[in-house]
Amino acid sequence: MTEIPRSHPRYASLAARERVAEGVRVGITSSQGLIAQGRGECFDYLLGERITKAAEKATEAAAALLLLARCPALSVNGNVAALAAEEMVDLATALGAPLEVNLFHRTEERAKKIADLLRSLGAARVYGDDPDAEIPRLNHARAMATRKGIWGADVVLIPLEDGDRCEALAAMGKRVIAVDLNPLSRTSRKAAVTIVDNLQRAIPNLTAKVRELSGASREELREILAGYDNRKILRQAVEEMREHLKSFAEVLDKED
Ligand code: ATP
Image (cartoon, rainbow, N blue to C red; front, side):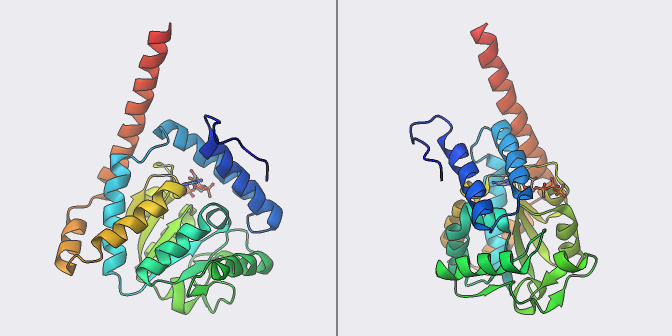
């Protein structure tokens, strides 16, 4: 990987870019993943590369939903594997939940490489390299799922997902939690809970919330969800983006 000096003002963003490029080189990320990363970077810039209040609220609701779940499952694609494999394993461990590899541009080789990576990082249950079920309404390769994992789950976390699959999972009656920097995407709008944040900030934040709320009663967790409105959260994320742009415009005005 290219060495990026820690002192570089855009270190985090450049390092993430390197990780996705390295993911492509070692065969865990598809070349299309580079485009998704670029789109994410752009929205992160507009958000101010910070955890917004909207993301904090969505993270609390996501943690409550995952802790209340009978059978939660966490989806991992090529970008997620390149950017946050260890963090996903940590979240799965905190929840006692399985991870399942699901790829938009699926090859068996890539699915196996990602599953092996997750296992090598200590994940207890990893599915996706030996699917035994299909999600209705999706074409064959993208529909592949595992009964003990996503197919049988009641709550599914889908970081960096496309809108079709999010919709298909929701149509199966699952509660879907998305992590997506784009509050306008179909995924963001179709999910029950959308964390509008960078995956690399969002997953450790969610794991910390899961640990913090793990002693809460089911009643307390249900109360968190009762007060949650995803439409409102998406509007708030757009509003926080707008405020960031406005403050930036003011800085430019002062520089004139
Ligand atoms: P949709 O079908 O939901 O409208 P899309 O076609 O915009 O989705 P893709 O091109 O598949 O989606 O990209 C996946 C999404 O992941 C994009 O919305 C992008 O902003 C987001 N994304 C990319 N990188 C990250 C990241 N590191 N953290 C969070 N979100 C990200």
